[in-house]
Length: 152
Image (cartoon, rainbow, N blue to C red):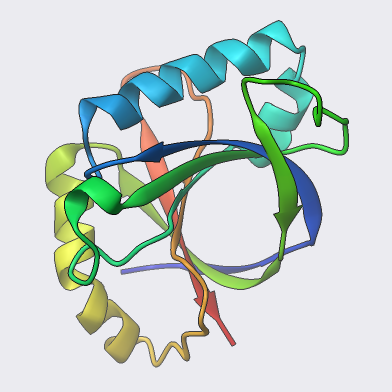
């Protein structure tokens, strides 16, 4: 499986959080709400440049599904600290191995099931940080998502 190396910089960000099972309808609904919020606040330049980051905060084998936290983030230097719809924070950048996967349930599940082998076969030295999903707006039917593995 091919990948590229990318350095993400430290940035301010806004995010929405859902607590519940990963892959749930609530996470899909949150994505729709987040995209609507982004459009309403004229953050299309940020969306185009950075995409939306999906960050699972908990390991589903160690955390009950109803307690799993999933964040959707958008990098922006604009101040939304008084906005009730989003939270603000700081994203700690770093080095990532970026894998591009067709955005279908089958291909995404295949990626996750092969992930230990992918890490081992590519000799990736993982660091303690969440694996990030990145979604960029694309035209057409060939939608993809990217998985960003934090590496040393």
